[in-house]
Structure formats: structure tokens, C-alpha cells
Image 1 (cartoon, rainbow, N blue to C red):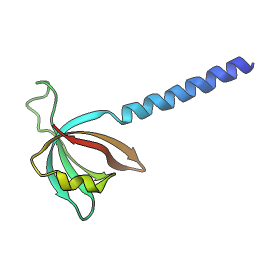
Image 2 (cartoon, rainbow, N blue to C red):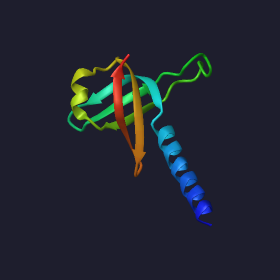
Image 3 (spheres, one colour):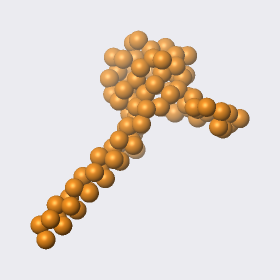
Image 4 (cartoon, helix red, strand yellow):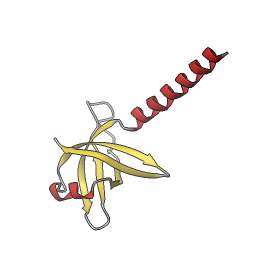
Length: 98
């Protein structure tokens, strides 16, 4: 009985870790707007490859976890970034120029 409980707990822990990893997938995009006062950034997704090349990439607005990073970024910069979502707010947790 104890072993079954441990297996279930381990499975639940792996499920949580797996969903966190998916939530932190690295994405690629181009900065379209920066609002240093509110600590937000708008990024247009850049699709990988040619699949869906005829569709217009979506632009999303995000809060930035470390607003001091915005000082080194500019509209038009291509970036890789990771986003987490909590309570309906999408937050950039990591961002780097390409």
C-alpha cells in the first residue's frame, strides 16, 4: 500500500514538472513595442520553418519579470524568450537578443 502511494506521488510530481517545462518553452519573435513605464513588451511570433508561412504571425503583449532588461532591447530586435502564465497574465521570464 505504501509503495502504491509513493508511485502515485511520484507520478503527480512528474506531471507537475512536465507541465511547468511545457509552460517555459523557448519561443522566437520580433519586438514590436516596448513600454518601459509599465514594464510590458509586445512581441510578434516568428514561425519556425515554412509551415504556415502564408499566415500572419500573432503579436502578443507580455509583462516582463526583470524590467531592467528592457533598457537593452529595442523595437525590431529579434529575440528568443520564455513565457510563464499565472492568473491569466503572461510574463516573460527570460529574453535574449538573437
